[in-house]
Image 1 (cartoon, rainbow, N blue to C red):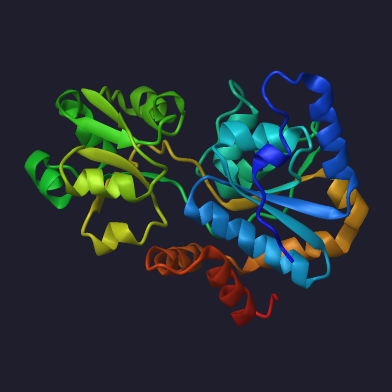
Image 2 (cartoon, rainbow, N blue to C red; image 1 turned 90 degrees about the vertical axis):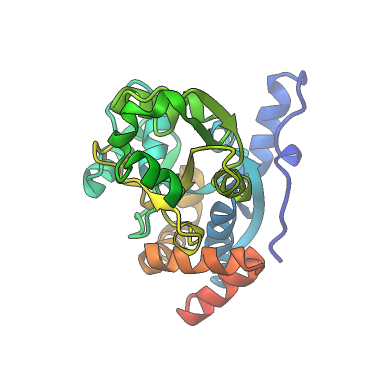
Length: 302
């Protein structure tokens, strides 16, 4: 059975020093389970369920660590061996793993190649990327778009100083959120409102007029359903964000070609449209585990 676990069960308590962390990592890497982790937003939980259930159906013992937290927590956990498999997004993963290094671009093969190059000196492997992508999107209501004549992100340049922007708490420092909007587009908003990671709080803030613009995800089905306007990224800030599993090298070495083939088969079947459809099912109240089970069964992957 796949069990959801908290990262607290893997990560040492504050003040416990380095030795317990190494012990926990040794236990995680040395057991017979593959620990699949997700970030703290629904689509990431869905992807962890999809890959985890597919691996379990293929005979692997899987443990799920769901809603662990932002990339700033999950990636170090993966690097230290506290989790072993993370469905990542190629461009954001590359940027995080190589701060100050080459910038990921919208070129999918180039971004994937650069990501693999960044991992050469780390105990991690980037498995085959999926055709499915999910990138950050700057979104406004139709009323705001009409009022200020907005159709692309660069249109915000002349009005941003009078507007409030809403997004995840870490948005101001992230290169594909406010920090990137500032450097690529010269946008300085009057106020930033910390909300959630592309979730209901951001939608409510937009609809209620508490923020004028917000950060959502391109696979969010509610953008179209609610008549929101996704501004075109006309200066190419957002990179290729193909879903790409990052896995500990020890796991690949231990389980070999069969393990890789199972994960790659899932990635090959994932599309951007299927992610949108599954996100819509979850938004309607379906648990991520059930949505994943049905999607895998329909494709003969579980």
